[in-house]
Length: 446
Image (cartoon, rainbow, N blue to C red; front, side):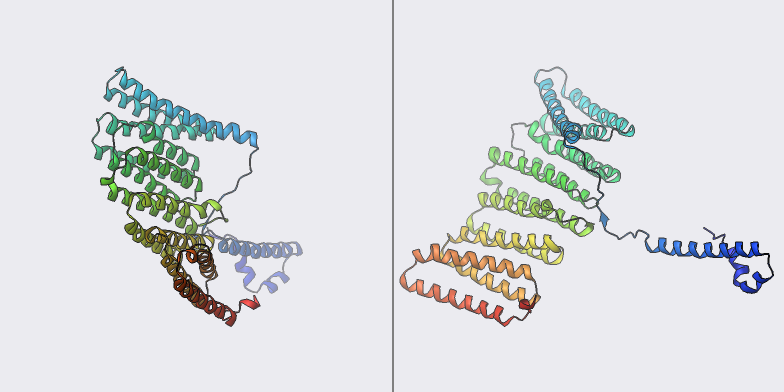
């Protein structure tokens, strides 16, 4: 804006003191007042310019007053329970109507789409009238109904070709993420995620649709990653993880067969990648306080990966796959994470790597040798790079190794091997002790 007060400063700047001498005292006082106001306006503008929001400034999570327990139960928890109940009812209706031949598959699918769109429109109507949670729950229910309908049309009724249904799910997931981000509504994203992951559980076809199911789950996980790229919604991340875990376990228990080993392993790897990238995105882009959920998602996904891969892969392949995953975690912790998340990823990588070794080596004494070597190497790296969490992780691995040697290994070795094992262990421990006693990093002064 043009600064109108500058017109006052023109005469004041050119010999202001001489100009005031020939003025009426009242006019002189007015001129001084205007000049002082001009200076204040300039200072205020400078302060505002310094405090202007920058485009690269971290997103600060908004805080809101915490409602009472009764209010949360009545307005939120009952609302979510109602959404789930209606979603299950819609699924049962689609199944019942088809089994009893009330209407044809095409009509059922049309009714599903109309119902989903209608629920979303009704939710928007309520939301615009300040019934936020109730309106968002109806919108989420409408999105979930469309997910149900797309799945039923493709895999249950065979009306839509798989690629068409897949494209529809991709568009629906992208649109949901876009609307949730624009509105800054985590509730809408969570409701849609519940419906999305619940769809294959509610409308089981009784057939093994591995490729279709995996593609569907990965689309939903990709939508979650896309959403947390713009909003730090840990609730959505946790809901997606629980949904992906539930769908994977149900499918694995009921349908997994040995010929599907490679495809299943790839699916587990991609799930691990999704739930490792998501916390890193949130941690790097948004300024939020320490949150246990943010730190636990990646370890939980690694545990799920270890259990799944360990079940379907032979011991040697499992060892190499896990070592590659552990290296990826180490690179992620080193290059892309900071603070507590960096420690979480590092510890997860070391624990996964160490845990996979006995599977391939049958817990033989060579496992202890590998653990000890890895621990010593990590201590040296921690000293060279001045990384305390690396040294602590290495010390933890060494402590586990020492306990294993004395509790398990010595009882399974001959006298000569016992002497050799204890000698190697003693030399390694004394060498590490020497490193700490040299105190190169000045830790005693800290």
